Amino acid sequence: MALREDAWYLARAFELADQPVARVSPNPRVGAVLVRDGAIVGEGAHLGPGTAHAEAAAIAAAKDLAEGATLYVTLEPCCHYGHTPPCTKAIIAAGIRRVVAPIEDPNPEVSGKGFAELRAAGITVDVGSGAAQAIAQNASYLHWRRTGRPYVTAKWALSLGGQSAARTGKSLYMTGPAAREEAHRLRATSDAVLVGTGTVLADDPQLTVRDVPGPSPLRVVLDSFGRLPLSSRLLHAERRTIVYVSGDIAEERLQALSDLAEVVRLGRGPRLPLPAVLEDLGRRDVTSLLVEGGATLHGEFFDQGLVDRVAVFVAPLVLGGREAPPGVAGLGAESPAKGLRLTGGTWRVLGEDAYFTARVEKEAK
Image 1 (cartoon, rainbow, N blue to C red):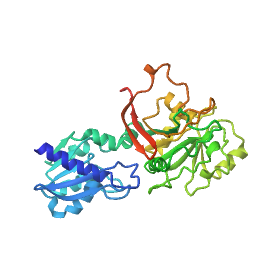
Image 2: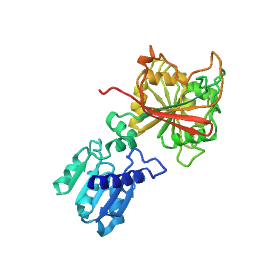
Image 3: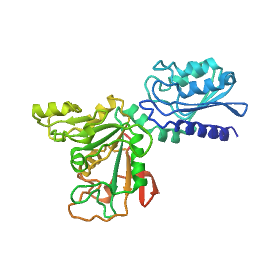
Image 4: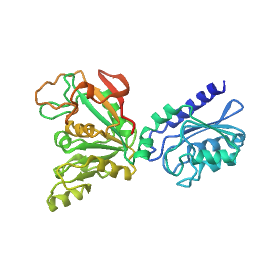
């Protein structure tokens, strides 16, 4: 019965962690539930940097009823001073007798130390229940903590013939309103969105969130030779865009671009080093990155093993065209047997379109 009760209360904590509309990064999503004598006496969720952590919010809601209670929390409680005091000290001071959590926090300032501090204070700590859900819920945070790079989602739309754009390169608007709404939701839940110069030249996108509530992500353009038109809409928004360059660019052109965007030079060759781009974004606290293409850029990310998740929209549309771009170009696999395997795939119907998401299956290293 205890295991069943633990699962039920942890499920509620996961629901709370998913509540915030705004991104909480670079912090993780965390929910907490306090239970005493079989009843919930306090709940909390972390709403973003600088706000109370989920554990502290639940304790504040429970007040004196926290004493002797069990705390269900979706990630190891922190034990260091940051924007807020350590949650471990609040848990100990509240007289909580038991803590149930799915996984450790890989943050080196925590990473098992929070659990150890609670156990040293005589609190029972049970770890492991709900681990798979905790890992999925905070995939971007956990990946960023472990690698220093953002969790990369490659997103594209396809016609029934497999083209991602018409033979002219135009791709607006292949899908219907429901699919476009989901695409904007992907942006709203990503720290940054990245495209190549070709996409900007073809579609002049804004890369903002418009069809759903939520903040617009940081815009990132890979523009090796500084070809980005200065009139591009993404250069004239409230939040500045980061433009990565690597090739030889005239000083006057570089200055003109720098007046409208943050220009970052990485390397000196004709191709930008994608791992270095991801590492630079990681240092900027970008934990999740949405790569919106085009096909050449997607191919480079896949060829270099840098994609962690895919989000693909399929429209009931026939484009045809020998020269029309596919969803993913690049070198590609030698055979289906050597293709990139996906796992945990799901299909959804959005209006007249289909939507597929899955994780990239990577070998353990």
